[in-house]
Length: 449
Image 1 (tube, one colour):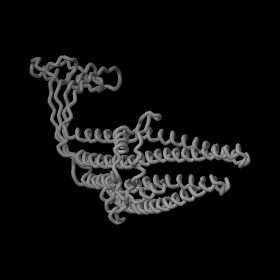
Image 2 (cartoon, rainbow, N blue to C red):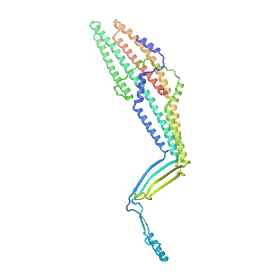
Image 3 (tube, rainbow, N blue to C red):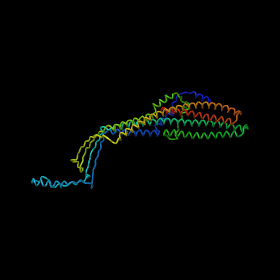
């Protein structure tokens, strides 16, 4: 019966079947995974950088009051009284009048103003500034690269969740296989016990059967440990409690996908869909914009306007202290020791490096698809071999089981073929899981969601 089921399964050819359970876990992982949350936060950070760059296009308005107290320090001394008083006195004598003052004091003022305030509102606005314009474009292009980086992580997370889930299902299948093997050995122990009690066999056949049961129990304990570890890893990826139950899709490892796409088609699909290329392309565009920025800085001046309005004077009287100041400015660095030329060359080198990186990533993607394609092909061939192996092992065991019950086979033969069947079942289970894992790896390389 088991051989017939395996044979029927081997005849099933279908594309990858959707699994609502696994698809739901993938969605949960994309929504809750901590690594992906970090990427989302990084996108938010870059978005704020864009907002900051955009804010530079608006005028800056600031309220800047200052008040100064001073004592000591340098002074401005000028003997204006000593110079003018004698002259004015002579003029008065010559004209016979008091028209000219003769009590002018010498100047002796602190350079640092005391009891002086400057209460003003300042306005600054860049009419044309290449740094502001190109920096805004660069930040937008870096955001595009960061968003592509998040999609790269999403693609990797889908693959990781799927493979972790497949591994969990494989541990359950291993436990089922060990349990069935233990039932067979337990039945063997009962049979041997009857044979010993009827003096048909000696006691070593019973102790040998019990020893084989203990070996399976040990293997079962390891399998149960693997099951708990696999379940914890699935829950870790989903950011859930590590001991939370994981729902089982029992058909997922039974109906396997058929590989029908050709390698060139898969490579072209990957080159169109892989977000690593979009990430590098975003960085490349930002580097190209940086070249334009440095070239513009070398040729084009920055133009700005500004102004101040407020009160200025000694003491906060605000009487006869109002003033208004308007400014129009232009900044143009004519020579800075060839610094700008070096920056232009540096930006071009960065662009060339990213273009080379783009070519390298394209070649890496093609290589990844090729390796994943042939890995899946080898896994399918291995599965076919294990299907044949399990059929032969099952058929042989049925014959030996019948012979042993009729006293026509030795216990060592029964145990040998029982272990062969157990090994074949485990190999077949791992081969089925390996096909699913290799298909998930191919989907990751092609960027299939």
